[in-house]
Structure formats: structure tokens, C-alpha cells
Image 1 (cartoon, rainbow, N blue to C red):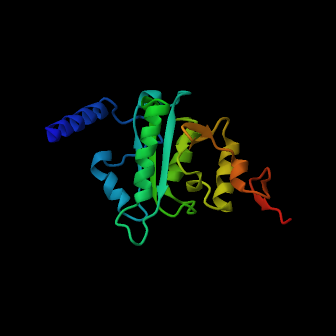
Image 2 (image 1 turned 90 degrees about the vertical axis):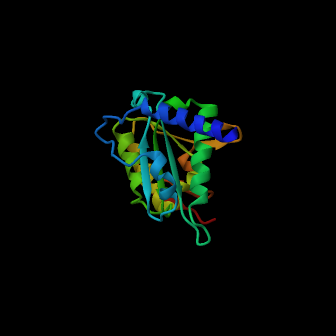
Image 3 (image 1 turned 60 degrees about the horizontal axis):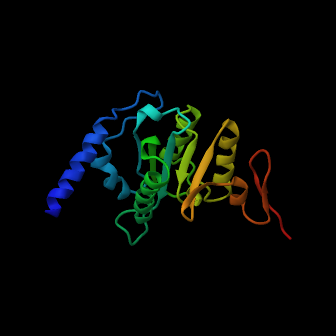
Length: 199
């Protein structure tokens, strides 16, 4: 009985995805289907995925992206933290926002400090194109792993008329302050350099 119920749920999910054909935004890339390759991505160092959904909301004020980054530890066969963040992010969007407003999912299996991560670069490109201005990042350290990555995001942030990073705080999603990410006894200048004060 449980097996049949599970099959029905999978069929319903697949039917729902068929209703959202590939978007025609110029920045959209073509990647294999989410169902077929997601776990393979989680198992491969240096792999990435970009999936576009709910194209009718792209460019709207409600539109939202989800960014997930993780690495594969020596004792792991896949990135457990990336899988956890991916599922938790989807649950948070469904419960606290509206899953229909999610227009893109970005997944990097790479070192968080690597600024050349392909999904990260595509995220910035899509935000520049106006696809969405809000992005959910469960762990802000995935964007701000070190001073160099914080400076990179700060420069990108200053180019945008509106750019909001959301992260879970308790039972809510709250905007992330870039200045808080710089750390105690530090500050960002207008060019995005993070200076550390010695007291």
C-alpha cells in the first residue's frame, strides 16, 4: 500500500513539472532533468546544476532563487550538507513563502571560497538579468566563505538596484546583513574590501 502511494506522489510531482516548460530567458542554460541527475551531481566534486522552474514568476517581485553549495568530505560518497540544505530550503520556501515563486535552483558541489563556481556565477548573471532579486541561502557562509568571496558579493550587490539574501533565523526567513558577515572588529569600505581592526 505504501509503495503504491509513493508511486502516485512521484507521478503527481512529475506531472506538475511538465506544466512548467523551459523558460525562454536568454540567460537560461539547458541542463539535464532534475530527477535524472540531481543525486549524480551531489556525488561529484566540482559538479553543478542550475534548474529553472515556475517561469511565469520570473522577473516578478515575488520571484525567488535558491542557492546551495557544499563539498564532499573524505568519508562521504556524496555531499550530505548540500543535500540537507537543498531539501530544507525547498521545505522552508513551501512553508514560509510560496513554492510557486521559486524560479531557479542553483547547486554547486565545490569549495565555498571558489569564486569560479559555475552555479554561483549563473546566479549572479540571472539576478543581473532581472529574473529575481531575492535568493534563499541556508548558510550565508556558502556565499561568504572568506574575505575575498564577501568582497566579490559586495561588488555584485552594489551593482543591483535591489538584492536580498534570505536566511533562516528561528522559524522565519530574515534578510542577511553583509556588514554582519564581515565579522567583529571589521568593516566593509565602499569598494567592498573587508578591513580587520586590531584592538
